Amino acid sequence: MTSPSQQKLRVVGPTVVTANRLSDGKVIYRAAKQGWTTRLDAAAVVTTTEAARELLTAAAREEIAAVGAYAAPVEIRDGRIEPGNLRERIRAAGPTFELPATGELSHSN
Image (cartoon, rainbow, N blue to C red; front, side):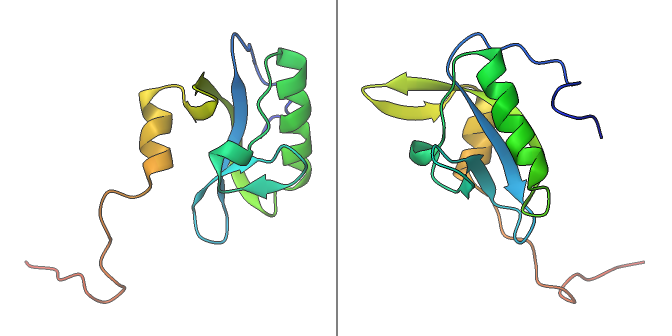
């Protein structure tokens, strides 16, 4: 794993730091105050590469809570923060189907 300072990062518009929570895999965002939140509207929105790098560095210190932190674009429409691309809209929407519980998979030969 590379440190946030070694990652290629270029911020060209409103950006948040996002990851997946280790405990349940849910999409989380670096909070505006500190820590993580599952609410995009409570995420810290930055507009400079340096500010995004600072959020990534703080996220890296808390690897126990999240995995795979990265900077993602957002759009601000009518005062609301929305995912800035299709990938992030899909992630924010959550799972599209439920996986079967362990032991419910059947194998046919």
